[in-house]
Amino acid sequence: MTDIAVRCENLSKSYQPPLAAVQDVNLTVHVGEIVALLGPSGCGKTTTLRLIAGFERPTQGRVLIGNRVVAGPGIFVPPEQRRVGMVFQNYALFPHLSVAENVAYGLKRGEDRERRVREVLALVGLRGMENRMPHALSGGQQQRVALARALAPRPQVLLLDEPFSGLDESLRDQVRGEVLQILRETQVTVVFVTHHQDEALYMGDRIAVMNEGRVEQIGPPETVFAAPASRFVAEFMGASFFLEGVVREGGLETELGFLAQPVDLPVGTRVEIAARPDDLTLTPDPDGPGRIVRMVYRGSSYLYDVHLSSGRLVRWEGPHTIRYAPGTAVRVALTPGHPLAYFPLREEPEGHRAEQAPMLMDR
Ligand SMILES: Nc1ncnc2c1ncn2[C@@H]1O[C@H](COP(=O)(O)OP(=O)(O)OP(=O)(O)O)[C@@H](O)[C@H]1O
Image (cartoon, rainbow, N blue to C red; front, side, top):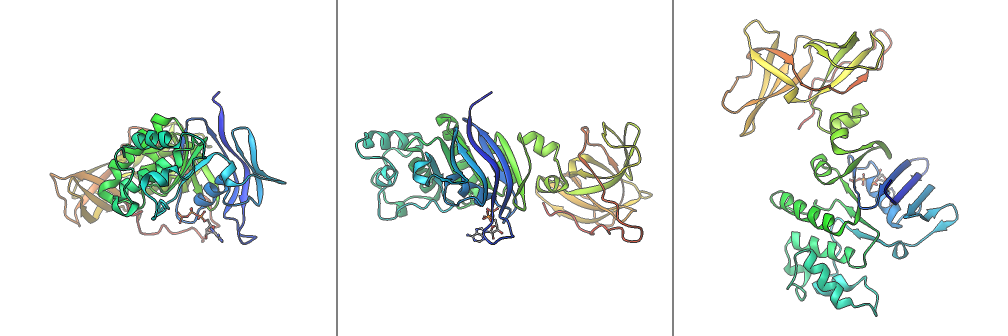
């Protein structure tokens, strides 16, 4: 069992009661781990981060850093005494201070500040830039200064708020890779906030998916992606459509065929099955029950929306070498090659069954 770096226990925060920005969050981060807080805008990610940093006081619950309670009933340790480093979304560099002065800012006098500044600037690949001013740096370089400043006092935990959102799309991939390497090298514990699932998958040892102030699922990227615990998580992790099904002996019956896989619900239960374009096989067939209603060219592939006889829409991604025009009749089979996530369908009273919205998640 590894040591614990951060623990949130039943953590809640209400800015305007009874509305809760963060509700009953339980989160344990181990030493050296990188944990992503992932979720849509307003789900409480930043508030959770600020509660850990000490920029907000919890309404309920506790925060522990290491084994020390830093926030809880009757206890509040201010941010500067928590040994936590934070990199803000906009980097928040001091514009009138040089790179070296920015990095030295959080270091105590008496310590060998110059040596430490040199050390962390070398770590983030900015050796020789000590005297530059922030405005004379690129976005990626500014971010590395912010990272160096946060790492300089050797924090127990590093908190990053949307660390790549200020960067151009073209730079983002490269900078992500560089930052991840720096974080791995320093072996620092990291909690970071993002609303990009690909960023969470790439950087996180574990991902905590948040929705309306709560953590809906926490687990390794592969688990959260392949075995989402709720419909919300499935959707947020890129499921592009849902199919209806019924639990049968040995699998799920769907309008696209029988899906043989383990199912832990009683036979007869109606479910929704989360699927992605690569879970389907499509074949043009004049007598097929499906019809292509939309085609999007993506360069390396074509993306098709297919209308099934049930009225449901599914999405398929096909090779860029063949182009099927909208209107083409097709046969569609479910061929995932792995178990699909499913969720019991909430039964509506007779006559009130929810209509499926005739749209697909836009991804
Ligand atoms: N200082 C504040 N006063 C009042 N309400 C706030 C405050 N800060 C955040 N909230 C509200 O709390 C909820 C959670 O906000 P939070 O910033 O934690 O979400 P988020 O997931 O980080 O969103 P984003 O990705 O847009 O930054 C939102 O409804 C937000 O409007």
